[in-house]
Image (cartoon, rainbow, N blue to C red; front, side):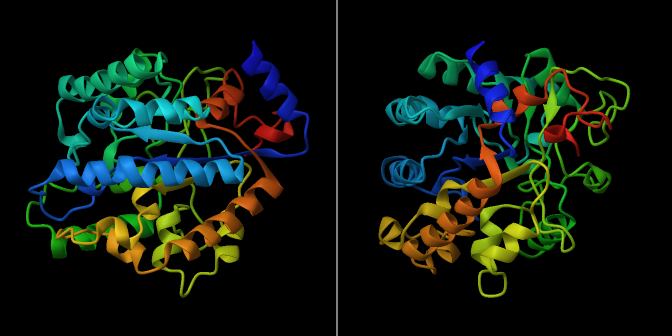
Length: 335
């Protein structure tokens, strides 16, 4: 009842909702080849980088949604508790973060989801309400599992064609084991760019006849016109050509969903002496951390000016029981 009261109060303000969320994929998940010392890489992320990000959120007075890997929840329970104690949402990012998650059997997919769910609940005392698949790759099996397990939302779909093309090229040129990276099917990129009720038989299509649903898809945001995903990695990788103000203004929609990855908050001293072939972390570190934080802070200040920032489970709760596509929906929910 208290959550409903808060959401109702927020709706009375003349702002729509936005969210920031972060995937806690450690340095060990940003490698072209498996590490000989994965525990060291995970420790760097959880003992140095995550506390830094939490301090950043405190300085911005923001709550976020953290997509956590079950094995890391099990290994670093005190860090997970500190995230939870700060009032952030802990969501499910599978138990082991298999990059070929979409190729697993339905039984194995459910095990990945259920085991992570169990660890999160054991540490926080709360069942996770949301899920994101590794690599944004998802299928009907996953939606069936999430509905069965009474999740409120999925936040996996990234329908940016630019991302699809870039990932395809990278896979062909740099990945020896082609099963290591799995691509979403091309037809899935026709999915809506805003939260929607997914059809049971075709999750990338909105359900037209179900006016009330307890399950919502909240896709990764994307920019209008140039089809770049609304993820902070885009801003870091293209900062020479893409001003933060343009990145933000082209991404504005009735509801927006900005994604970070924890490795974007790594600084060069964190990985000094670490001999690993990182995919993106060294690119992030080529820009001094202070400049990254300044850019992120500007982006978040614009979002706070134009939106009420809430967690993804709060966003899903705000949409439950409402036809998010109806013409007569309240202004906050028109898409």
